[in-house]
Length: 218
Image (cartoon, rainbow, N blue to C red; front, side):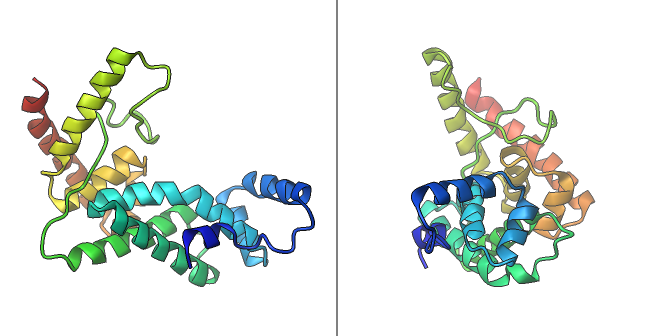
């Protein structure tokens, strides 16, 4: 099943384009828990909305974990296949985003385990405002001046180089926290580590990253 087919799930049988647009708007207005329930109630269009919401985010997460964007495509596809097959087993007292990230993370870890070499992980972050809030960090603003844009792109390149040198288990928590804005509790659940281990690894990852990046940007 291709991603295109997943996105098209449930579109058959819609009477006309207006009705289809209205249905999409209604589903897009729902939160994750409501979309999940809509799917469990028999509306396959709700699954297309899940794919729309999580496709890009999961691809970014997995590609930075395994260091291979093409392989990430396959792993994200497999994530959605498993979600489709097993959503009826999902414990709705849990947060859906944590569950789907856990599935993707486990698939990525299995991929790494099957490799004979350590992967390169591309990670985009900056050294300030580590704990400002839980929002993902963003690099570029379309309103940014050209000289600022060049500086940000230069910094991003150096950050990518620095993060490649972090141990795999440090990179994972780094990506989840600083790129995807996950809370410590969510990271603990996704990685299967206790809260203390998550905080310890993140602290070490930040310190190591700072030491590695410093000479690159002097």
